[in-house]
Length: 477
Image 1 (cartoon, rainbow, N blue to C red):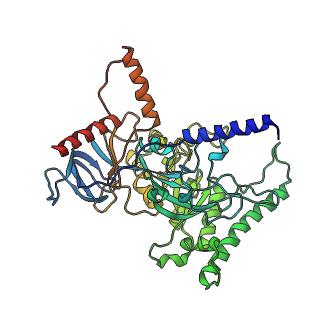
Image 2 (cartoon, rainbow, N blue to C red):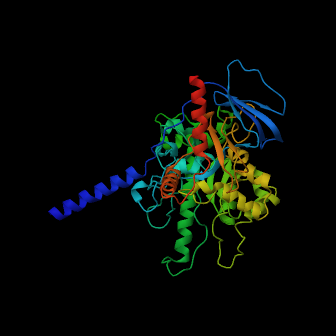
Image 3 (cartoon, rainbow, N blue to C red):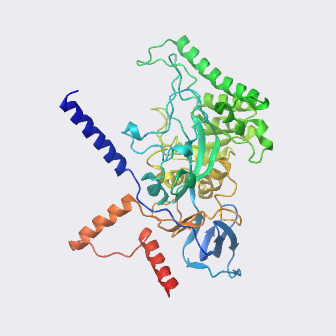
C-alpha cells in the first residue's frame, strides 16, 4: 500500500470523526424536579376538554395532579415552585408520529444512517436501541415544541432481483426528546411492527428494464413474503417452541392473542400511500386480526369507509410534501387533512420529512389549517390524537393523571410567531437552547459589539435561563 493511500485513508478517518463529533449535542439533560410545580394564571388548552381561562396546572413526580379553573386552589404538603403565567398559555407538548430522529444525522453521509437493515424481514430490530441520544436534531426539534416522537425504522423497499429488502424493517419506538441514554429516551420501546407495503402497480418507464409480467411476479412474491411471516408468527405464538426465534417473538405483541395481555395488542404500522396499497393493508390486517395504522396515507380519504369500519389509525404526512402528479392542483396535499376530517376519520399529522426537519411539525399542522382544517382539529392531530394512534393513553392532553409533558407559550404553538417560554418533559424542565440558538446569540453579540444592534429583551431559552437563575437565588436565600 502506498504512502499516498495511507495518507488518504488517515485523512478520511479524521474527516469522518470530525463530522461525527460535530454532530453531537453537548447539552445537559434535565434533572428531576424536587418539588411540585404550579403554573398559575395561564390559559390552559386541555385539548381533551374545554379551554380554561386564568387556570392553574399542578404537577409532581412527572404527572399532572390538578387542573384548576380560576380562583380555585389546592393544598400542597411541600412548598411548590410557582410559575406566574398571566397572559401566557399552557399546551400539551407536540408529538411527531413518524420520524427517524436519532437514526440519521447527516443525509449526505451514509455512515450516519442507522434506520434500515439489508434483509427483507427484520422485525426484531427495535428502533429505540439505535437512537443516538446526543444527536443535534433532538434539541433543535424540541425547541419548537415537539417533545415526543415515534421513531419508525425503514428505508427504501427493494423487491426486484433474487434479494428482497425493507418489507418488515423492524419495531417502532416512542421516545421523549430528552435523556442521557437510549433507555432514558424510551417511553414505549416496542410500539408495534412496521410493514412497508411495496408499490402494487407495474410501471412502464425509460428506467424500468423489466417486463410487466416480471414486475407483477416480484410484487406478488413480496406480498407473499409479508403474508408468510405473519402466518408463521401466529403458528409460533400458539405453539410452545423448544427454541426461541427472535423474529417471531417480535410479532407476539401485534397478534390477536396479545389483546388479553397486560400491554394489550400493539398496532402494525403499514407504510402505504396509494389507494391500492391502503386497501391491501387494511384487508391484510383484517384477515390476520391486526390493528392497522396507515403511515403516509396520501389517499386515505378514498378509503375512509373501510378505515372507519376497521377502526384503523392514520398518520398523514402529506401537508409539507409535493403533489403526487405534475397536473395535480397546488393544494392537493395541503388540503388532504381537511378532506380526511370531512370524511369523519381520526388522524395524526406528521411532516413527511422524518429526518432533519421535524421541528416543522407545527407548521405542517398550521398549513393544513390554512387549507380548511379546523384549528382545534389540527392541534389534536399533533397532540392527543397522535398519542392515542401510537397506543399511549396518558400523553397529549392537559388532564389529571397525564404525563406533565407540556409547553408554556405566548401564543398558539402552531404559529411561527409564538415563543416558547418553558417546556417540561415528564415534569422536568428542559433546556430550549440548541446549536442554532447558540449561533444566533453569538452573532447577535458580534453586532452589538460593533454598535449595529441594540440589546434586546430576553425571550425563549434566554428567559428560561434567567427565570431559573432567579429561582436559584431565592432558594439560596
